[in-house]
Length: 161
Ligand code: FES
Ligand code: FES
Image (cartoon, rainbow, N blue to C red; front, side, top):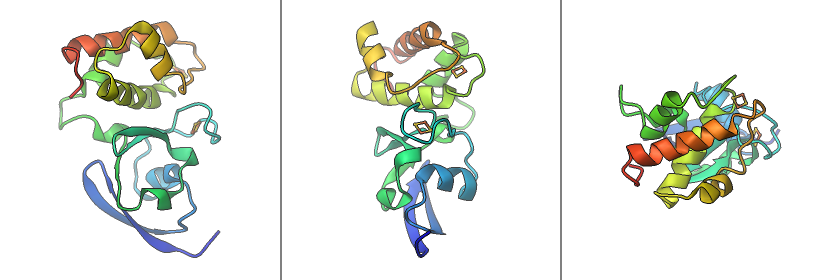
């Protein structure tokens, strides 16, 4: 462990400051220090995408991101996607399509889909597969996940908000 330092960044629109070893992972800080357990620890090695978050709108694996790397940046987690009681369209789509079994991968899948639709509001099935290929589902719910992303495209009229 290195010396502690203050790291400041925005999480789900709120300015946060943590006093921590700057080499700790963003995932640990989100879950353990900031009370945001929605982002999951799967492999811890950048292989499964369960820990996906948005950093400046881009999907990143929080398990492989030192918290110091997000200093001054904007991080959005699964907890930050809904607006009050209104779910994000991608969240609605996953619910409508029952696109999960155990649900462990779901937060990461939803975050990855949000990033995908931000970059490409009307992806083809091949583009959905390519855009989601860093996220693994050990329950093999992939067909339903692809359906959910297609449904999210419909809900957003071809453009995620
Ligand atoms: S927990 Fe981060 S990629 Fe698997
Ligand atoms: S629903 Fe179980 S890991 Fe994807």
